[in-house]
Amino acid sequence: MKIVVADDSRVMRQIVIRTLRQAGHGGHEVLEAENGRQAVELVQTEKPDLVLSDWNMPEMNGIDALRVLRGAGNDIPFGFVTSEGSEAMRQRAEQAGAAFLIAKPFTPEAFDDALASVGVRP
Amino acid sequence: MSVVAPTAPDLAALLDEVWSSLVGAPDELALGGPPPDCSTLWSATVTITGEWRAMVSLDLGDPVVLAVTRAMLGFAEDEVPDVASCTDAIGELANIVGGNVKSLMPGPSVLSLPVVFHGPVQVPSELAASTDLHLSWYGAPLRVRVLTPSS
Image (cartoon, rainbow over all chains, first blue to last red; front, side):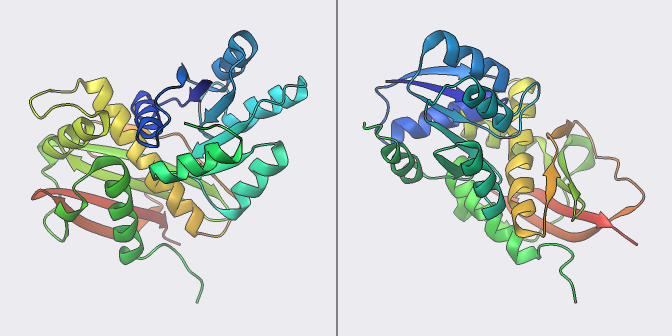
């Protein structure tokens, strides 16, 4: 499977990729995006199976990227990996069409559960 | 009485979680200690605006910045991360601490992108520390503050 990891922090992208590996998902191809706009472009050109996106990014934030994709009729599974895990943020994410929200700091188990919820298996 | 900021125990529990998940060696985090030495100080801040307003600031000396960056990137102990990686790593720490602080407080509010300073942060005059947590990690000091409008 092909997964887009979008985060403006290179360190956090590496941590997300490492955590995917720790969760048993090291076999997937990972494509990195530095912001929401790059994530949208990658979804359109690379046809991945899942997007894992930060919320707060320069250029285009995660929820705007999700809205652009849904507005274009793209229903790719989209999950947030963000430092803001309040109930209000979870509701906003769900209303915009996100499948899940993983709050930072996170565990490999949280990734495995979230990916399983959209049918992505190790 | 209304809640004005997370308490020091709230912040300490949050730091423990962040270290457990992203940095490692949370058992080496200890409460107390002096502020980091100003000559080697890095500061990373985020601001929260909206129903509740605050600046969340992390102050760390060079030894902690290097060790945290190394740990977050999975570097070996003898590898020296570059300035861009250090800036990215501690900015992300501030983002995570700030985002979690935001989640504890009344909303709606908006979290800024992190800003990292090589030196002490200039705190706006209308803000004062509501919570000021001094810690050490492997004996090197770090400090987390939540600054809120003083009036």
